[in-house]
Length: 212
Image 1: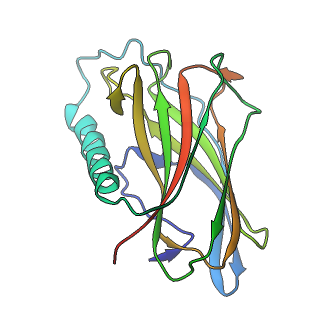
Image 2: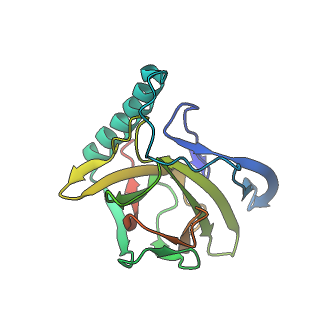
Image 3: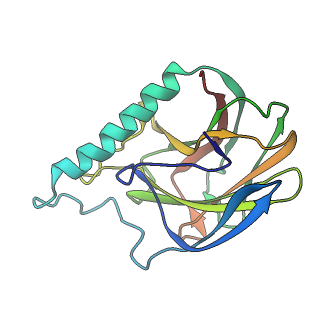
């Protein structure tokens, strides 16, 4: 169990890019602020991915980790918070930040924090970068960058289909404890190069209590 920290397998479909770390203290607990960045070739288009040299075992590793996450979240219905935001039909503007506010009153239990992404067929890329910022009641800011793989190497959407939408749960923080009670703010922004990004229908945030 960690305090506002997380651990993901290196072959998980959600990968982090970290350039600089700043370590501080929060009531005796170590915290790390991640300054996000993106590689020049970090956006991969869905079109043209039918490459016969692709190794399927890499894709299957991504899918297997995703199935484990979907199974885990399906089995754990102990939601203490769930909110979602619909994006405009014309697209997600880069300056449009999704804000989620959570009132924490339990500092002893363990929680998972999950970002829910719903995309449609108009989304033009295989991956999806998001910037996530959390602010604690005492104004400590934590920043992270997540790369979410929405499609496999053959252009097939990985998320669970529901009509024309595909739902992908992204594990943002695993088995964390809130260090203090009060209001926590989570801000999510799209990190793609598009000023207006099409194809993302909805973004949500879930906090689930983990059974010990």
